[in-house]
Image (cartoon, rainbow, N blue to C red; front, side, top):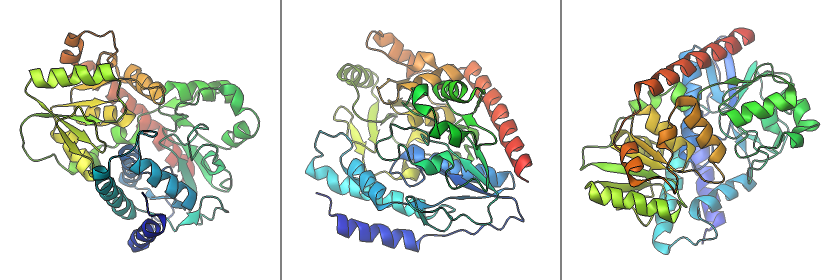
Length: 383
């Protein structure tokens, strides 16, 4: 069981020991508002890549460091028991605890603004530009961030507001955006999103076409590539995600055994994998995928990291992530990497043996150019 008082003290010690960055960019200063504190590999890396990408554009960017004890405990509960209502085994609790510790340490080293309460007044001084996104910042169905009006710009109207690669996640009801939420979104000077579901919602709610851009990990992958790859070991495929359907588990395990390839599960226990790295931190995650021969996932950033590294990919849709995964597949042309229950085993074999085709790389380059153009316009407008 999670000892909340002891763990809260550990969190406080790590956060207060971390770096607090003060903008000093001669006026070209920006705050990035996203889910940077989640115990989630994609959330960490998209936040880091966007900040470092903006800094490569000579913008002194920091993550706006919102804090909430309620959300911290929700994150820890989910991190310790990711497959609720399925219980976590006693042997895995220390591994999940170590994973959380690594995340807290990694987040504390990011460029952070002075902390402020998520539920309280926002005090962000001397930062003329605020960029909201990436991640599911506008997902009204998110279990603990859903409906937090800060991510819709509430209290930030004195700043120039833009979004970059924002997403509504599995929220898909434009009628529920009427009134307050639409009024807040109208405060944004420029809006870009990372999936077609979000583009459709913005179009129906605001009557404008939001720019479709790449997730920051694909737009600014250098920080990911710089951490290197897992040291040479026998060929392995990484498994990233949990709650995979039984038919998919069996199909992938049969493929791995037939091809003398180990399955290494990152961040979660998947009993059908050969090996588990449950305690992997964000850098461990990037290195493991970098050194893999292929990626198996049902998570959005599992697909993104396979593309960053040019790896063969097999993914399966889930109810929560179907919008994100299917839209990404359509955007970059990796529909053949999506495996369904009716797919023959030969489909999986091709998916895990062939790297992204040249046409996929061309599509990513076009989207990268469009994403750069969008961000350059945002920066030019602000400064």
